[in-house]
Amino acid sequence: MSGLVLKLGPKERVLINGAVIENGDRRSRVTVLTAKANILRLKDAIHPNDANTPVRRACYLAQLLLSGEGETTSIWERLFGQVHTLSGILYDQKSNDLLSQAKCNITDRNAYACLKTLRQLLPLETRLLAQKTE
Image 1: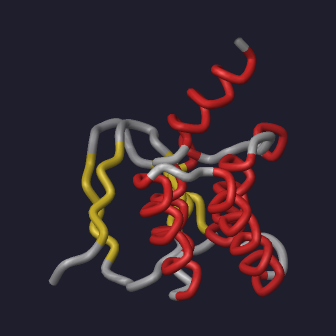
Image 2: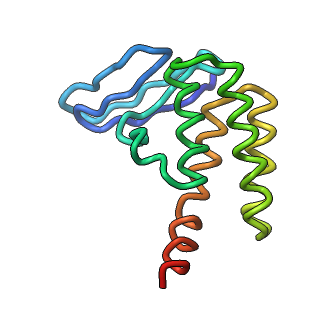
């Protein structure tokens, strides 16, 4: 059987279907066999105050879906709108491919895959914002 393999560091916390799970004192691997389980590494979580850029806002919305907070239908709609807005801003091929994949993830209602895809845009956004302030 295959599934999502989580490699956890000592004392690392992860949110799985609304439950916070903390690893023990040693590194470990956990295989999640349930398809479309809601999983969020808490070390990767974005604090609401840090959702202050377009990509971070999209990531935060996907994170809300994974944590089970809020009304899911409206969050999916907001996430799609945010990704659509990003598609009009980021024109390079890699960004276009990632945003197309994020839209597919949204259509499939796969918040984990969407967040994973959107996080790949964070370094580009950081570079673009740094250029803007120069």
